Image (cartoon, rainbow, N blue to C red; front, side):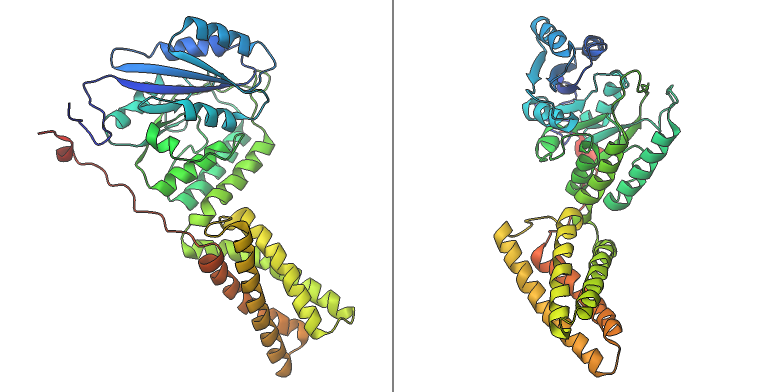
Length: 389
């Protein structure tokens, strides 16, 4: 039978939804969560439930085993050591076989009935990924934790700036994907950094992303909420780490200027210190430059550029070294030239450092860590295109 849309899914045939349920110490809500997810199943929606127990310390694993014995749609996967939510999702996603893949926290902060609404644009062939936003909903939402909401708003805004999306809730648990989309992504984060990582990577794929409102019943920490300040800092780092290698060149240069600024300060301080130690002008310039180059390299591969984007580690370091040597000679020549013009050595060093900043960015961006540009956004299918002959 011909598909009624470009997802390859016939609108008249049942679809299969894989629901990944990461579980860590959720004995109080796991069984109810599973039954509420199963309740959305009907003649057009078949379910595959994958519970991933992340080495729970309570009776969650025992409950999950009992559910797996009684419920044919449910399979149980187990981690021998606690790895985190992102790792549990990575395990579950790898085993998913449905047409679409959804994420459902076992704590029931999110209502499974909303999954049906999230599936509509996917099934219609309009979307490849659908987000459930806690801030678009006209449904009831438990009101808690102002500072959490403020942090969420900040992280979502920063993520949007770098992905060119206009999401309202980047950190939402409810994300539903075409299985081919989510299984094509290599998930690296083990904890709550999964959310900004996956948003960055699907944005770089330029697939069709939709968003709709959902209900939300948040928990207090006394009720079992686990996310904390450490996870917020990790989310901030992940937004930068997974987005900056692919942002437009002017934006990337601004962030590189910050990294280069740190390295330049290290360069200048080392130069002045070594010069006062009577190491000599030439030796001080070269030593300070290579120390700063090491700082620059570390910050570059940590935040801005994709490590091993083109070369393996040894080749990358070799190319980087050649670039550093070349620019160090330029830096030395500029510094000597400015000094010969009568400029004070520290000020001469500042001028040559600015020149080096531009050259360093160009060399790193186009030679050491080259990145292919993002593709164009996937076009929206028209109503006429959906019609079958």
